[in-house]
Amino acid sequence: MINKSILASLVPALLLGGCVGTENRGLESVHQPVVSRADYALDLGVTGGALARGEQQRLAEWMTTMRLGYGDRVAIDDPAAEGPRARADVSAVVARYGLLLATDAPVTPAPITPGSIRVVVSRMRADVPRCPDWSRDGSNEFESNTSSNYGCATNRNLAAMIANPADLVRGAPGTETSDTALSYKAIDAYRKKPPGGGGGGAVAAPSASGGK
View 1: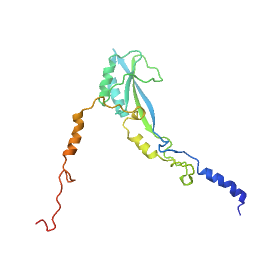
View 2: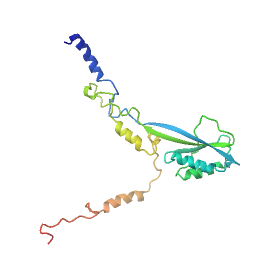
View 3: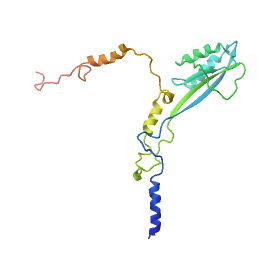
């Protein structure tokens, strides 16, 4: 038979056990996307201020391996002005991937060898840490918290789908001007479309007399 004093001491522990874990006190989840950045560098030789022979091809192969694409930021680090004409060579390779060279390069830890320039690719990644999170037992909730996993699915999907994770940090700037004629095209097409779901026209129902 269990001693009543032991049972009484276990009850607070059981209640406390149901209240540990991540607290979600509001409708905005504590699980938010976190954006991180990684820099990848490649040093290229220069001759006469331009890229040395074969370096442009080596750069293209490296960028193909990197799967360079939208959201990546490419810059040239040339503090000693070794390659004043190399920028055009690098820009021509970067343009194949639909990107433009950035004006400034991030600081990299290793020094640049004399007679070379450094191409730096900055890539951002968004993720939601600590998800999924089932750390809180929702069956014993006495503090009006939502589930500890609340918001994980929505925000992880957002982090996975966004094309440029940097937009989660500073947003995407809108266009300074708008073309009202272009905006009106969609509205005009909607207004002129005939009612019905059969490709623009109403579908006539067959008559009860077999079509006679």
